[in-house]
Image (cartoon, rainbow, N blue to C red; front, side, top):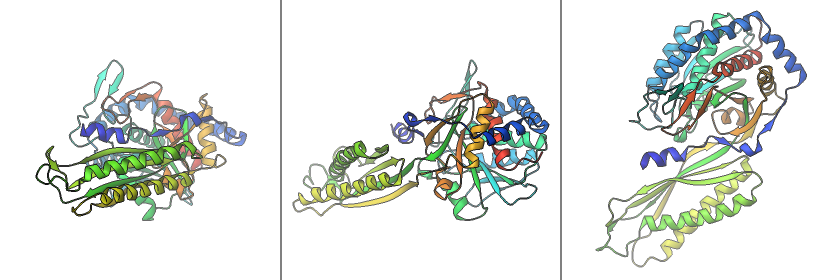
Length: 429
């Protein structure tokens, strides 16, 4: 039950499909991408991606079977560092928080374009991550989200080096820590806040399928609420304040008030009590009761309003419960923020969005814009152009034990990632 609650808390990563829309790139970007695609070096890189496909899939299995639970991604990170080093042509290192980075210098180097996949999965320690194949489909927790994203980065680098593609700008390949759940984007936050590198454009590979572009980040705030009391025996100490009873009242106020607001909010705004626990036995008055709460919205104003509703509901519920006690000491509450992802939008007019769109169109695919929550939220909030692209193939059941991935034209997404990256970094040859 604990695992089911954990997985359910972070199951949905794509938001607002109902608002998805088709886009077409401006003519100058379509012309640019067409010219780049016709270059012999790019054609050679595409051919190399196809040639590497059996190896890419084999190493997808290898990497998937290295567990990467929340806050325990380092073993997978070390293996991935070795894979990057084996390619050659890049400076590879692990920073102090555990991000794995590989820098490919450009001819000029005035700008830095980053391409990212995250190392962690949502699955706790002890989860069986053995890859099983049924027919042509691979099954394993994390095989799509986001191990496949890591393999896209690695194959892009291999094809780029093999074809000796040059760019004006520097390119940074990044395998980040802590994207999922309570990891709270710690890898990408560290990268930007510690100024180890100055990034000008950001491309995340963290979505299923081929042809989708996310240029908008769904904001979220997450809390852990802990109600504390003296605890005691359910019979002998009957009448003593009960944290579970108080938390139930607090949840009720929050759920009612938040539901009313979600109906009138100007954009989609959600709330969820995803985990709850506490207590020692059925015949004991618990000394603590806790829950974890997630609130999301597509704009900061609505998210702030939902946040204020949450805090007011917590206070009202606790005060009301405490006001009805007899001689018992009052309960106290501890509210800890365990996650924050700002919302934001990268303008459609930016070169990164235009080049992403034109690259997808060059493959005869209709681009689709969608909104999601992920690593790209952070650079977007800093005013840095950022998009999230797909890892290719077909996949489903992300964040569940039944997650699967199928190689259905899977190399197309890798080629699109390469094309977007190279064009944004200033293709030379």
